[in-house]
Amino acid sequence: MFNSSEYPKPLNEAQFMAWLEKGRASRIPFAYLLIIWDELEGEYLPIYVEKRADLMSYEKYGTSPAQQLLVAAYDLYSESRVG
Image (tube, rainbow, N blue to C red):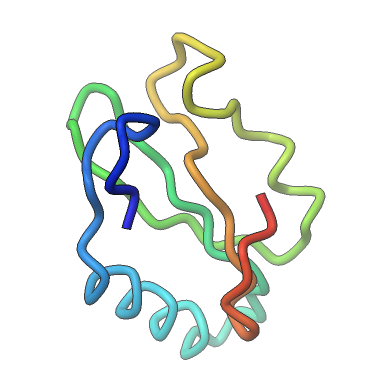
């Protein structure tokens, strides 16, 4: 995933699927998986949120100098990209 110059580095598909499963298995009723790029660590991080409105609290990759930036957001159950 993220194998283009628009993204900082590729993300392993198996890692992505593991993050989806972890979010679905949580006792907290998460609905969305956010893929966050951490500029200092040089790694992607999974963030789970319950409401779609929570996506707005993250600045998007490529538009901000912040340390942690939203690269993409996915619905945990349909696996469709929502942001």
